[in-house]
Length: 291
Image (cartoon, rainbow, N blue to C red; front, top):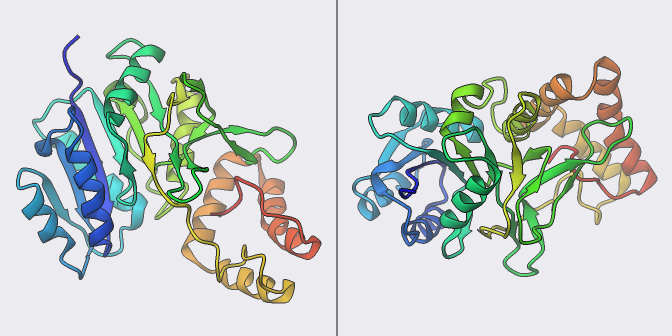
């Protein structure tokens, strides 16, 4: 079988050092071709785009408007890649804070070929691990079950591809056939939850979704310090922060996600109240609630 042709999709904003570290690890992958990299520099003021062009002159660096965020930036990168003349077998979503492990792309392609024959629809998400603790930070998820349909649990890699219900968008391989059936990320999401939505839509369409056999690299989890998830703060302080967060971009995307996949109007009410009830009860925040 010929080597897989992979179009890499990325979005970045003012994280030049992280972006360049990510690209250095990407460039060391045998299956990587710089001319198949589509990176949206969404209004960076730290010369990220110029640094990428200097590092990888053949890469497609696209200037964003500055308000695309992750979902919008990845949609733009994907649209440019699909409109190009560069044929590909797979699209790779890659966050710029991920440092890929050696042979990560080869591992993803091998797992995709193991789940579905080359040319068929398949999505493989890879786990990432925390650089300090080694704990899994992102990857693929299974639904926990019960009345809260959006309770999700991260899956631990076990050496073979495992079926999943949905995905985090940090390191994801989407076959061209899957993209042809599902299209791009949903434009209703501005920043987050477009990845989880994409995985759930894929499952609904009968497209195999799986966690890769081993972690693809390192990526620290988003910090909760200073947010309503910070357990060091008082209950009253966390509730005040939560009320403020309800007016923000992430909460808007979360409500859209709940309406699409949560199970109706009562689910929206339940998922809206749940964070406050957990703060009052002193219970830890479960996976699958707003990130």
